[in-house]
Length: 295
Image (tube, rainbow, N blue to C red):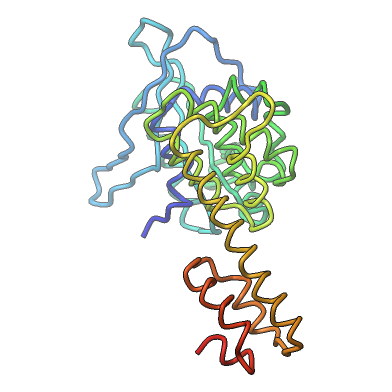
């Protein structure tokens, strides 16, 4: 089954195929005119033989106002080493080249360092001089975007770079990602909130907390103005109240010199239900043991 993490970068490319041109320029130094039209194309590569091959995404780049294709791009997300891809990727690319009759590229998005290193290895098929080296977007590619202003100008590319782990999720890089997400959300993009969820889903816990704080409070120039931010602000307030109530429970127990195990402390501090915490506050004043607090 295809996972959300697999589909996330491809969904952004389907929504905004022009981001492919930005990626080719920024990540791989491929010269592409600004005066272009970009569209998603068929992802099927069916041969005379019964086996059918389907790429994650295919994009066609044309001169603006012209139907003539100038560049074709196969975009794939790869989250694990899969030797079979070293057979299908050349087929995708040569099939696209035969169909469009123009220069064609293979871009592989690999969030993991080990998978990215594997995907960058040349693919040889035995024919002399014929080796395919995929253009890999992942750890070791970037940074592609180095300021919040750049992120606001190229928000979709910034989000894809975040999903691909192009740069480590530091506070600085997360501020840049936040600027991109806020720009998309405030432009009322129909999937703006989905992109924010996509990024939050793949971040480690500490980085997720930093980005959530940016989403809730904003930065000097980039703030969420939609219901998504308001929901996060409300959630943040509720979490703050819950933490305060949990600390009150522990303070009362400590004042009454009752021993609190690490397990009980974790249970109290992780509770987000305000009604339960209120009950515990009242019980903490009278119980003879911490075990009775939960009973």
